[in-house]
Length: 468
Image 1: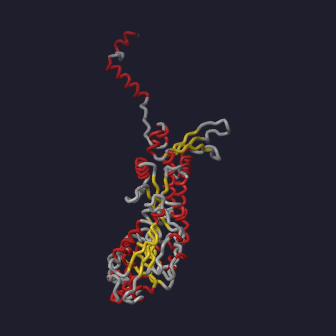
Image 2: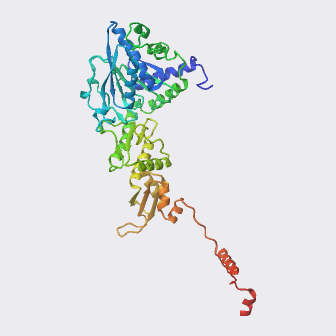
Image 3: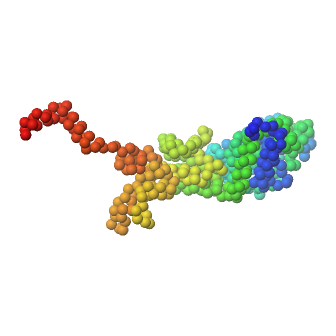
């Protein structure tokens, strides 16, 4: 039987669940002060659950009938903006107010784009907030906190909440400095269906008792952290297959160096893409300030809509798909989640370089004689991260010590471009066109005589004998 066919309370699934939790705690270095809960609803569901549970914890610590509080939001992109909006909706007609401690749009050049995260000394915290929320990486806008959140800027005893849905497991995060860390699994930790929640144990409270004190919204049982923790994430039927896939993902990451290695990998991948952008002479226009650039989501624009469409179409031919930016911001978005390999990234950056030039002309000087053209093509394809089919080479003699092993190499941005500009004989040589087979001499002679006969010019046997 498959994992989706067995009972969620069976011994087999319990073993899967326990190993998944254990590996996740190891990777994230979760301290004993915190508990891991597996829930549903994704990041957007967590917008609500984190507010409801932390307000309940605050209310139990402040049982006075007239107690009031504020919850702070660091808005750096579309997702944190939605989280703040949900908090405002949930706290209507309560003793809780929402303070947007930072709206990063006000610090952008146009005053309306999420393109930078200003220094923390420009933020406006409340004096004693019940929670401070931030989104570590904004997928839509390509904004990410550099290295980590500025913990030193927090008000004393503030409960810090991090949404790490899109960069979880791509670098280490100090769990001890957070009240809650959560993330949907579908970007770096598995597939959609399970939400990973790390919550400080003192925040696992009786939400019904807190609600009776008044001034806060009631917490539905399915949103109750304590209820899920007490039932080992099985208060209701858990998303078994999603948990199983997350377990496999954690196991894979552990066996490949853990977060130390994946952090280095993320840095290398994003650096390669940003290097191409920064050296494109304006063809690729980055939308985020250097200090706030995301390692997970690289966003940029091209000079005009036609160029952008051509970029996407030619990328698609090479198997580079889903590069179109989010509908709310447009442009191009390159997502570099953990599942994207360095080789995948090299293929993309090779295409981006070639798209900028249309083709590259390189002069080759092999270190040995009699190098085959196919070997030269393969070497060029590797150098420029291009398809072998998009590379054409041809030899020539030089007067400066070259010889037949010296040659030109043309690297086109696609095989279609090579077919358009290369002569037919080289296309045939490289397997991009079929060679036209010439008829034999005998067949040509027969065809010639046949055509003469049709025109009445062929010699008859009688006239031939008469001539003799």
